[in-house]
Amino acid sequence: MLGLLLFPVRLFFKLLSMLMLVIVLGALAGGAYLAYNYLRPASHAAVENLARGTVTVRSETGEGTGAVIATGTSWTVVTAAHVVGASTSVEVVGRDGTKQVGRVQTADVQRDVALISVQPGATWSALPVSRQLPSPGKKVSTRCFFDDATRQGLYAGPVDDIRVGKEHIVQFDLAELIAPLKTLGTVSGETVLALIPVEKGCSGAPLLNQAGEIVGIILAGNDRSAIAVSSASALP
Image 1: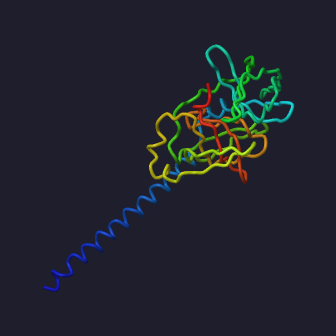
Image 2: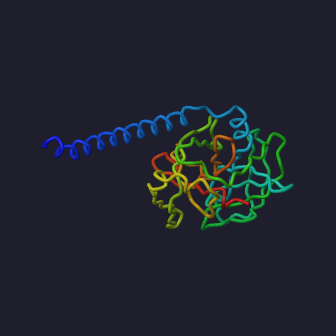
Image 3: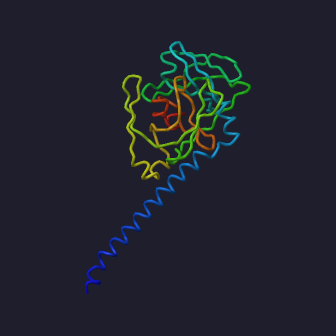
């Protein structure tokens, strides 16, 4: 009789221990997945395209990085709006040192994205744009105009971006990591978070997925990490 009375209790603790085991195994699998994505190197073609598709942007008020993209038959440099400021024209310098004057088409202060009309350089490469965000934990990469190496980190997910003057104050929703399917579809007007080392001068740098496609541009950082990145939905 006592055994029958204790059976539900034993069953409960057995199920609880099985649940804990599943949680631990899930956490280990998630950690292994993140480690695998972080340690897997980007392809040589993606690294080379990133170098050839990154330029320096110099305005009257600042200096930053730009990403070269093709819009139809025209070539455009995308950068952060705070890099160009109120300038109507900027100096664009390629990796090979060639310089040209680019005309600022638009400077969206709210999204902090600017588009610059340029003539394609002989050694430039237009970076493809992806409208689909990576899933959380995927590796992303960038390159600032003064770099000789690729910076790599992890994509985290969409954030709420509150603008206070020139500063970006972001709020990250941890639910995006728990429910990553929310970030797999095309989004519009999002700001996203990337855990990737940046510093002054990296503003406007392209953020690439593992396929070498632009999924956003660097807008701001904190403690040498990118905390605000405009998603590709803000690009033409």
